Image (tube, rainbow, N blue to C red; front, side, top):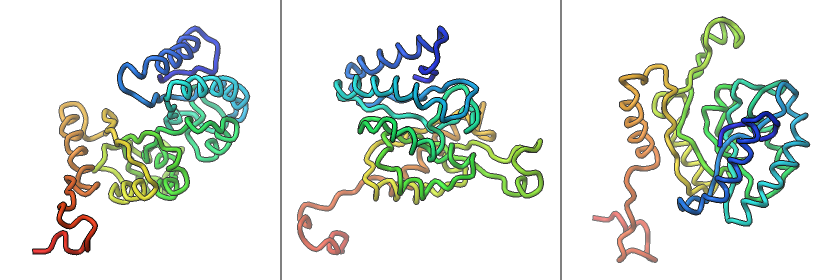
Length: 242
């Protein structure tokens, strides 16, 4: 439910009701998680949204918990920043600290992807180690940072310094990403989010997405291969013995 449930314009009220409807009806789809934006008090510093955030999301968290549903906030800034914005405050680890202090509910977490951190020059891997317990859903999306542009033009010049990419074409080592997620106990899916890559787009969109699917499967270790029954409980080094 990607809107702004913290404000009071007509579409904001529709969004808030939409969250309630999604939570109430998730079970019809076998879903246990609903994702979207936190919302934001428009045009104000991020911290000004916290009282309204607490009011709205404490209630929605209880509603969701009563139905066995978790809520995941996507970590996309939607062109906002700490000083101002229109949609979402859950785009920065400093904001996560503030948010989850306001709402310590165990069923409130994040819909995370490395892309939205790389576009702000944040290293995703240490973030996984610290925050993976709050990752309820992971998007397969990456980014390419053009460091030569940053060194010559900075991040506020006319030249674009970062591009959102399909996994397999960006800067992230997804072997490391998946390894860190697994070591942290994450067992959910990685769902590819396409339609952002500046190269694999238009007629090449599905070529890029299928390549991303195969790449991510390879990064997770390929197809699952179980230990043969005769070796279970025995010496694991014998499992591949010839």
